[in-house]
Length: 440
Image (cartoon, rainbow, N blue to C red; front, side, top):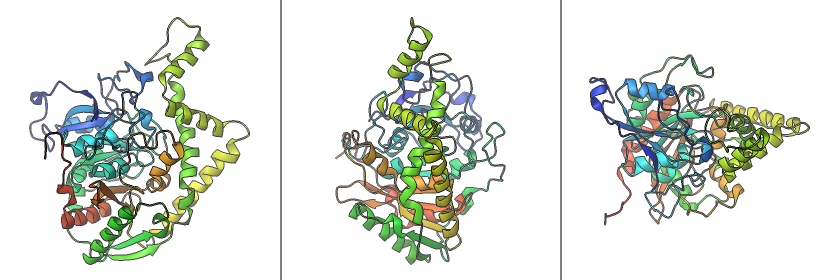
């Protein structure tokens, strides 16, 4: 499946705290999260040989609770993608069908959890990169509120979008991990100084009185009928359990992909300027300085990374900043306002995670717009900075998993866990596993 890039051979339990909630538990991490003394490359040639001298805060917190960092998972290069095909180390394959993508950019993390290669994994979510692969691989993926989990030690894509979150087999496992990951970090200026509740206390099979909104803008032409059928059936199940289901409006949703590919690529262009062959990573030697910059970046970055750097540089350039970047930020505010208004009427918003189930490897790789539209239902969450979770809600007729997305108000992950857990326990889709090699 090519889910892992590196394994940690130092699986030594003797050095770990003996009485701890994750003692000996193997947790894997996306290859854009820094681990002290371990090569961390963002699945890119340009960071070959890059060995961080420190742990990301989330790694520190996992280690402090006894977890073993089992391996580093493959991903789209620098998290630029929705299929995990842009990795410099080859594509990841979906354990439910090895001819299909696992989603992206945290595809390696989701595939590894789905195939029981690791008990849990960390991903990062900039425009859907935890939730969409979780949906494609039939597992649970949580994108926390922006600022809920420290970004210190995460190699940045879009600094005002990125969040680290858990990918697990069950909602309960996600809640346990969030108890460890969440909380203020003085090393991250965007980290929110807010108390963290015990998320496991929100896990109860009771959604009576909960108000759930279905945005009409998310059930659009182009959505796979089997995906829509499963998601609407999920809404009916929650209604049967006592929740109130009603229609809500998110009128600026249609602009979300366009806004994202202005603002996020601008941030990416700025963040990736530091990778030039001087400080760390790949360097093309024996060249004059200017040519060394050009050659290193040309050979080090893949096609999609170059595309986003060029797009971001263009929208930030003189004469285009106001026309594109500034206008994009204004529309981002309108999208956030849509959610604020909707959450005055409902507690949770329910949508598909993705418009289709997993697509074939190579199917969209040469059609960037089609690939970008894979995240049409997840991107608005990152633009607004709110939390969202994807959980399994059924299967297509060909046996591919379908993901249900739940969104909540900022810092209200508890309501997400409550709703997701009630649905999960009622349906038990999470108990189904892909048939791996050798299984009949």
